[in-house]
Length: 156
Image 1 (cartoon, one colour):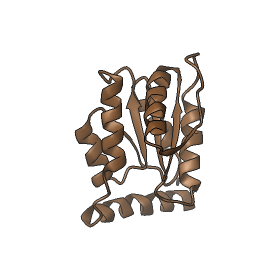
Image 2 (cartoon, one colour):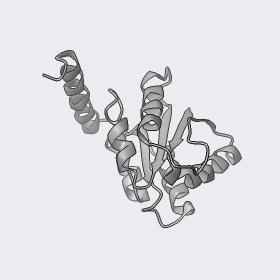
Image 3 (cartoon, rainbow, N blue to C red):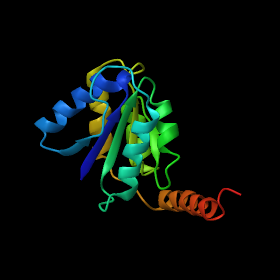
Image 4 (spheres, one colour):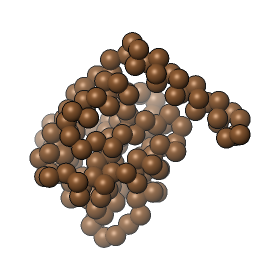
């Protein structure tokens, strides 16, 4: 599994904390930016991360996006077919979005989370929670089929 990371300036510090933890745990990752706390737009970074996840040969690869609220990143990432990006602000929703929604991109809000440690707890929970399948797979299949239909019909 490779973790693909991205943030805007609002999420830069938490992303650096996550990177330190990934290095310590010897987990493979790629950082697609931003690379400083200087103001930057979230949309291109979210798009890049989502497209890497979309085209990953290993379906176990996952993305983490961080901005001020996580919302803008999730909106952009979810425009990419096959992406299931979820805004998460606690470990309960981190677990639920993996178990029930098979989320492949985690979106965090740096201005919403109480601490860097809270972000790390969420990341650990999200990365270590498997998809349950079963009735949840049927629900994800419905979304995937609808997405394919809309793409083939060009949104009509």
